[in-house]
Image 1 (cartoon, rainbow, N blue to C red):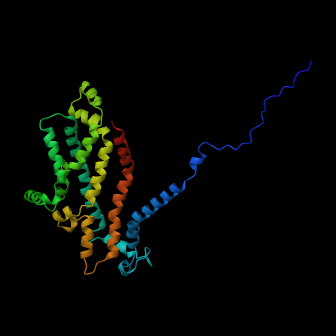
Image 2: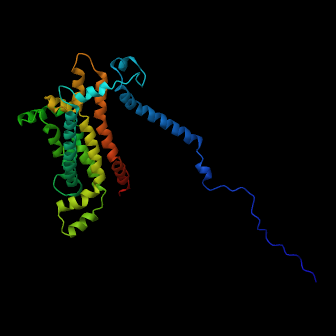
Image 3: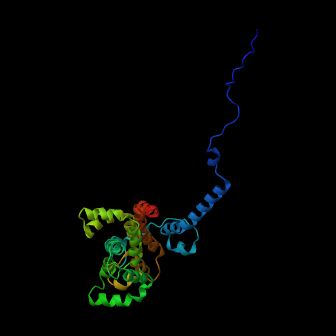
Length: 303
C-alpha cells in the first residue's frame, strides 16, 4: 500500500514588486509643480514693491529716479539718520508715539463700542431693533466726505480741533457700522443655550455679555482690532484736516511735510521714513495673524 507524497504549501516569499499605498500620491504631479511655480511668481510680484521700498531707502538721491536697479550702487546710510531727525524739529520717535496713540485709542474705542452695539442687535429684544439695524447698515454706503464738514463744525465748537479727540472719540460711539455688522453676524452663530444657562444662574444681560458672550467673540474682536489699527494708522485725510501743529503730527503727515520741507524732494530720507511707518503695521499683523486665521476658521464652523 503506497501513499501519494503530500506537497506542503509553498511559503517562499513572493518576488512580485510591492508599492506603498501612498507612494504614487506623494509624487508631485506636473500640474502641481506648475501651480507652485505660478504661486511663487505671483508672490514675488506682490512682494517686489516692499523690496523696492526697502532698497530705495538706502539709495542716494540721484539714483532714486535715474536708476532702475533694485540694489543701490553704494548704500547711503545718511537717509536713515536724516529720517530719525524728523521734520520741523520733531523727531521720528515723537511722530511714532502720536501715531500709536491715535491708533490704539481707535482700536480700544471700536472694540468696546462695537461689541456692545452688536450684542444689543444680536441678542437683545427691544422696539425698533430692525429699523435701527437697517439704518446702521445704510450708513456704510454714506461717504466719509459727506459727513466731514458737519463733524468738523461740531468738533470746532467743542474746541477739539488740533487735538486727537476727533480721531478717537467717534470710535467710542460705534460709528463704524462695518465692524458692528461683523460682530453681530458672529454673535448670531453662538448657541443661545449658553445665555439661558447663565440666566438660570442669575446673570443679567451685562453679566452674560462680559462672562459668556465676550470671551467667545474674541476672534471677531481681534479681526476688528487688526483692521481698525491698519485703517487708522494709514488715515491721512482725517489727520490732515484736524491736526495743525507739527508736535502733534503723525508719521503719515510727516511724510508729506518731509517732502515739502525743502525746495527739492528728498526721496531717500522719505523712503527711509516710509520704512519706519510700515514696520508697526507689519509687526501688529504678524503678532495677531494666528488669531485672525483662527477667527476665520472658527466662524466657518459655527452653526
